Amino acid sequence: MALAPSYPWMIAACMALGIGETTIMPAGMSLIWDIFPVRRRGIALSALTSSTALGVSASVVVPSLIYDTLTRTGPAIFGGLSPWRETYLLIAMGSVLLVLPLALLREPVRRERVAVPKAGRSRGIGRLWRFRARLGPMLIASGFIVLAELVISGWLPTVMIRDFGL
Image (cartoon, rainbow, N blue to C red; front, side, top):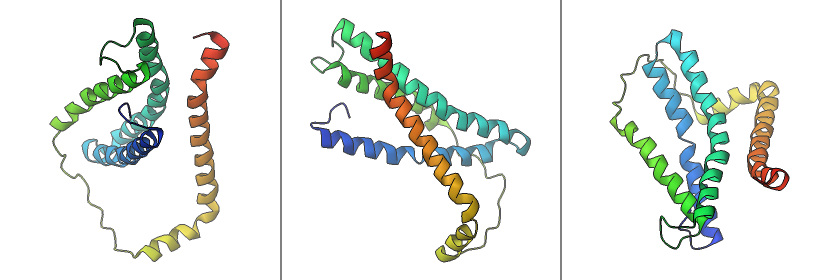
């Protein structure tokens, strides 16, 4: 995103990032299922899902601190890039350093195999449709929760700058 030549390219990079991020939660849950015994899975899954809130909070605070530092000291790290672009590059470099240890993890042995009958797509959709009275409100509520999180994380920096001079 930091090297995007135009706004449409930056939007495309954000979309690609979002598509990549959608794999994190299912992969994490699968790993937890295989690594942790049944009695410890609840704690591990809670830690994984709670990390989302921590990540959203950190995604507002950490880049803001980096951007503030770069605007005070002047862009000097990547020579000539604006502070917001340098912030993106620094966050990307830090993310790579955090992800590299994951390459050292071995694939865990599958602990449990559950026999799942093969069902056609229409059968699976039919089963979901039967639970629409319960699933519908939950999906709508989840959508509003995500929307609220995005609004808060998007507007929080502006409010902090405008009202508190940060």
